[in-house]
Length: 189
Image (cartoon, rainbow, N blue to C red):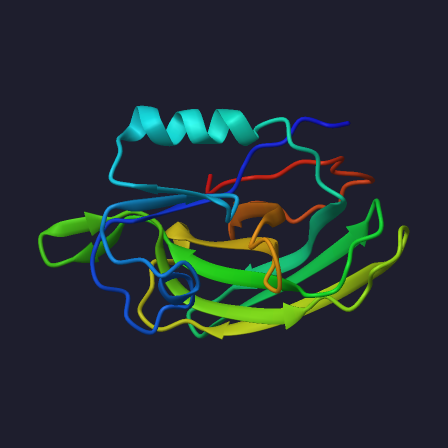
């Protein structure tokens, strides 16, 4: 089994009313950190979040994600992702594609990894060896292309809320489809 790097996100501003994750986890306090969709930490510190990541580091994934292609211009961003099943998975899984901007300026503050747009798709393949490809096009309006990136993850939305695998890259990084990613999870780079 391959080594995994967990997926995590931090709510540091409040409230995220109407936000899918705020509602999914019934969040009421910030900061709240969520690792792999199942380890919810209210409050905490970097050391506490790192411990949560370390606990999930060697959890295997039943699927592989690969960026097939991605590009960004001053008007739109395009992402094509392939999900390949290394093991059978049940239904109720969704693929989320999140376009983000790092170092976004908000008044006198610089925000890290600001979500700019999100797309979601149902994962309809369930048997070992099956693959499915997903495409998203996002509008790009006034974003810094050098700091624009994309994250993709597969989450069990009908049961455990666990994120089964994820990956992230900036649009300036080459999108090379590897022969196999193994069972690797990734966080924002």
